[in-house]
Length: 621
Image 1 (cartoon, helix red, strand yellow):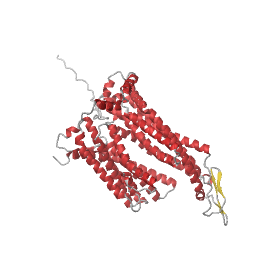
Image 2 (tube, one colour):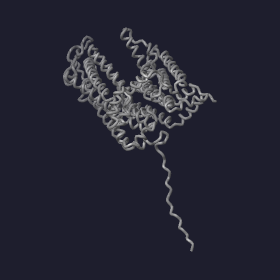
Image 3 (spheres, helix red, strand yellow):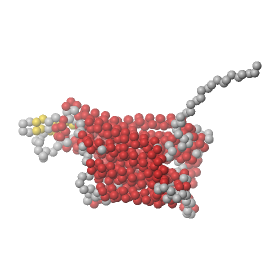
Image 4 (tube, one colour):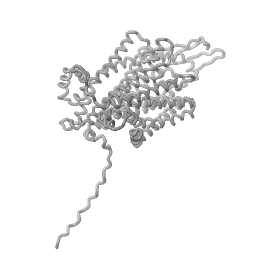
């Protein structure tokens, strides 16, 4: 037998796949589009080339880090568990293959596309060296950190896949491991520094791939090489653990334990006898598909636990009269919560149809009197029954927290406007000078903010409120409501589009990746670039309107205007996805349900032979 035969075969197969080539092209084109957008925004602002270079460098590196860390979620978290479910992994171990043969073969086959995509982005990232603002050492350190983060994520997905059988649990376990290492380490060090008042000292952060990239940009001595070595060793340790576990976890062992223990596990998954009877009585007659899709209750319990935990946290912060800066931090936590909700919505919406197609359940349901519309409506009702109330609770909590965060932003904007009013007046050319004394008059929102006094260091700047207290509250509530409307629309679009991706994809992870990419990632880039250009042009026009300087007034209205513009665009986008997905589900459901996983979607039709006239029959005279 040749050395590493599975690696050899899997690399050959992966190199011949069209997705390997097109993903590399898509990554390069995306990086070019982002770079062009950053340069265009910098030109609108009037920045220098070095400023454009450093902005583009940071945007591309951190986006590449997010993509590299998500590679383990969608590429390797289900590569071994899928083989277990299909029963093909055990056939490999009937030969002379070892665990490292199988694990390394799967790793290299799944990592080839991600590695080629990263290689396609690195030359575009090197353009920032020519633009200025980025050193050669910073570029090479960041490139090494990105490759290391990709390897770390893929290794984390491999070790979770080695011990899992369910695709969604493997996805959730990989996400938990990545968050624990990437975010948990820096968060622990920041908490220790805040409690001990000794500042941030990287200890747990050395195990974070995100900290490695952050340390690559640091000047002077840093913990970059120590963090790089630590995360790299952790990646190899997880890969070695996966190699050791694969030969012992592929077979489905008989569950041991007493009848009470087995009954407890079944009750945890499906509920008690009373719940099961009640669920059958309510759903199996009017919506049997809804009963099939929502029998498992652990997902609903998980989202309820998250909602109650955040509600308790916000209630505690309000009861203890937490500092106002707490709500600014909460807004970042809310962003992470939205990402988790989007990932959950995409994975849960496509999971039922993928598993039903693979097991042949959809064909059996189509043989019953159920119609295509009833099957789709049943799945949608199951999603609403399981998750609508905890999601509404999460959105309500986030509405209150976002409102408080916007009020804090208004206070910060007021202080910023008061302190920088003189500087902004000088930039706008509205300075009135006398022979020995300079007097300043700054107009903010049509009223005088500061007037009089000599120009010495002891002169305090004037203080003014950009908005009245009642208007501040109205603007904060409206801004938070616009953001939550966008979130609710995104969740609905992810659910409907995820159902269609579940009908057209081979695996649940692939369907989830397509759903997140098409509904969220790609539109987010387009919307962010378009809204930033539009708002930048409006701001430039407003700054110099009438020769006056009024930029500080826009600090109060900027969140509301940007959130409202984004909400309108996002809702329009999501309505388009929902309408298109519903139409495809209702019109092409039976065709997709009966198509095999290996059957191509687009088959060239054979040419129809031209009909020829039959030869004349010659009869005997």
